[in-house]
Amino acid sequence: MTDPQPPAGPDPSEPADRASAQDPSRRQSRWRLVMGPGSEQLCGPLDARGQQQEDCLAFLYDREYGQGRNVRLPSQGGSGSLDPSALTIPDWINQIHDLFPKRTIERMERDALERYEIDEMVTNPEVLARAQPNQTLLKAVLRTKHLMNQEVLKAARHLVAQAVEELMRQMAQEVRSAFQGSVDRRHRSFLKIAKNFDVATTLRRNLKHYDPHSRRVTVQTPYFFSRVQRRVDRWQMIILVDESGSMMDSVIHSAVTAAVFYSMRMMKVHLCIFDTSVVDLTDRVVDPVETLMKVQLGGGTDIGQAVQYASTLVENPRRTILAVITDFYEGGSTTQLYTSARKLVESGVTCLGLAALDQRADPTYDEQVAAQLVKIGWHVAAMTPGELATWVAERIRR
Image 1: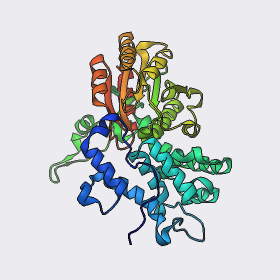
Image 2: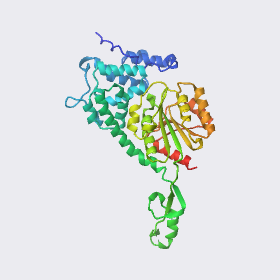
Image 3: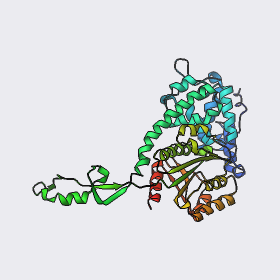
Image 4: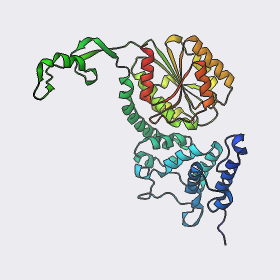
């Protein structure tokens, strides 16, 4: 007697577009995922991504059989745990959002909550209150906050605040150091800072203390350069962030980076998020927690409309930097995007397209759209927040 088939669920690898549906290898992979382990001889082996998808499906739907049916994840003391040693649920949430299309994700989340009662993330404020904040857990909270009631959402907001505070500490010094001013080699300074150390002058003026036996120069008086503080308060920076699910890491780092820029009071900072519409969060830029809790991940993408909106914010084109953080997969009109992008460049705005803004700067993006923007006159890159700050500082010092 054979085991029953898995419960009726979503097509685990529902194609994101018509082209993938026509790809024979993709069709074969989808059938392999639907039929499950044991169908390798018929459907062939899975690639690395397919294996990750199968692991996610097994995590959820293997509960259908035997003692695993409708079982919660192991917990201590009769309640769930989200400590770093047991981040199973957050990791699973993050993986399905990276691996599956929106309709499939919604079905899997519904089955997890209603059929298998895996609800610690979205129903238990005590679990969230005990959780150790980190970026993995932060992403999982942001992806499931729409499922939370008000009590759980309050606990989740506190968790987001803790994780963001830690990110702020990590990034603030890195970003601010780019704006400390350039070295002024014409003037000496009595402020003894290692990065200002004048090696050549120090050696030259201490040569009289050279010891021929040890062949060393004893430095009795070190010399340092002074630094010139640059005035950049007249510059304007507009940050547009694509809030599609694939941009989660960049959304988080964009909110924190914008807050750091704003806190320095050196530039006029605008922050907007977009999908098929644009939401201007400039009045909340000082509070990245509030910004992140407003993000609605997923949906379509209209980059052209967002760029067009950004053009209405420009005050002095030649002192404006526009940073559009997106994967460049345009769901709207590419003609509108290219037209708006060209007008900004022609007006004198410095335009930067970022395919990724996070600590890894590991992008996945539409190379054709990105290449066309480069031809128009945009700069396109993937950067860490520190690299972005350095890039901005170099532009405003020219």
